[in-house]
Image (cartoon, rainbow, N blue to C red):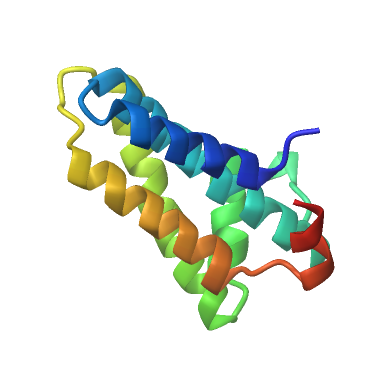
Length: 130
């Protein structure tokens, strides 16, 4: 079974070995985003969230709206960061003519760590399972 933190670990590995290669920088951003997305999804689900397919929103947008409307300051902040990370990931995956810089990759990983560790920390018993 793969866990959200496995995506982050892979992103960090890619970052260490491939900062000079744009494909690795792009892949790093994608893996980091999905670490944050799946972590946020797991935390929201633990608190009663479920996707509503009739909402006419993507799964990602639906989750972001849920977090943003939670009334919890950390969750609202996480939604803002996730929205920005999703935008970066989308650009990196679909707009091949736009360069992906090493500083952007580093900032992306830092933002993901902030979301996972500070804004949406998992209970101690779940962190130990990772």
